[in-house]
Amino acid sequence: MIIFWQGRGFWVPIITAAAMFLPIVVLRQVDGPEVDRGVCLTFAVAAALTVWLGLRWNRGRAPGQPVGHSFWGVPVQLWALPMILFSVLLGTGTITTAEESPRPRGAPALVGGGTK
Image (cartoon, rainbow, N blue to C red; front, top):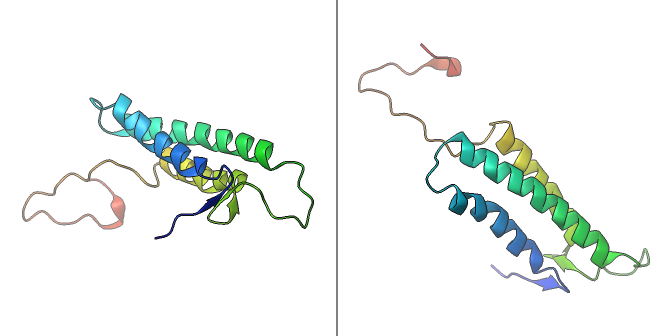
C-alpha cells in the first residue's frame, strides 16, 4: 500500500490514529460501551478538527487549481466525512467493540436478534 499526501495531508492519519487509540489508552481499565462512547466522541472532535484545519490550509485556491493539502488525493477537510460516519455508527450502536457472549452448548440460536 502506497501512502501519499500533498502539503500537510499527513495530518489525516495522525489525527485519525489519535482519535482511535487515545480513548482506548485512557479507558484501559474500562470495557464495554464506555469505550465505544469515548471513541465516538473523540472521532467527532477529530472530524471537527480535520474540517477546520483542511478549510484553513486549503482556502484561497482558485476553482481549477489543484488542492494544496490532501491525503490520497482527497482534500484534508473531506476526510471528516468518514470520521463522522464512523462516529455516528459507533454512537448508535450499529457497530460495537462489545463481544458477543458465548451461547451454552446445545442452546438454540435466537432468530431475529430477540432475547429469551
